Amino acid sequence: RLRAQTDPHAPGRYRVNGVVSNMPEFWEAFQCKAPQPMVREKPCRVW
Image 1 (cartoon, one colour):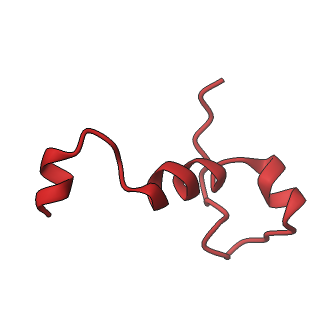
Image 2: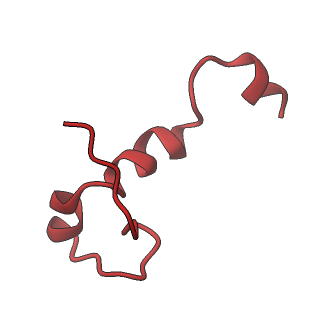
Image 3: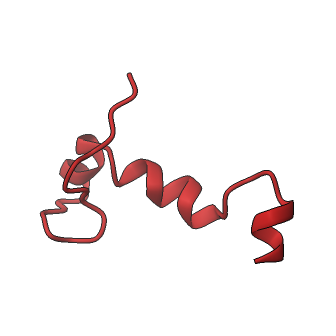
């Protein structure tokens, strides 16, 4: 909890898994299918 309050960076699992779990290219490359944890129900697209 202290680290979350003082470190400006997100924990590693969120910096990596949070990003790739929104990428259809990742799902295809690693053959992920819903409802696996690495496949978002509603992916977030920025670009």
